[in-house]
Length: 200
Image (cartoon, rainbow, N blue to C red):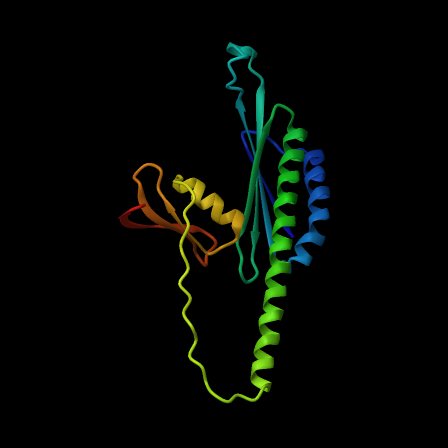
């Protein structure tokens, strides 16, 4: 696991780096169980002044923002991203690492489910090959209804795509009412296709 620390107008201390590296060490087990052994981690630390109405003028405290990105390099790839803010830098680091751990647990469960389905399909294929075949049947086409729950923004659609792990997600754009499709690219980034059709 390669870890890169980036500071924007703030310096990383050895204590902060050790804190992050210690927590990331715990994630190695989750990544191995999800069959992810080629991983790059980028942790970005930046600061800003609090924008809350409770603080006036110079009395507003400094807020630390931590962005953590984990780039998964193996087949399937993808990026795990989380960010948190707090007036205490260690609290912000702790929160963002907890969020990443939650996402890694979901990734592990999703990968285990995919492997289970893969094994089941493989067994069925082997069974169909070894079983005597009388007639070759044409595959049946099953029509499925597309259910789009509610209009959403492009950002929400991409977030939903990341969370669900699917490769594409049709949605109705909340601003325009048009049917769009968010999709996952091989590079790990995301794209939006505008069908120019009005959603139902």
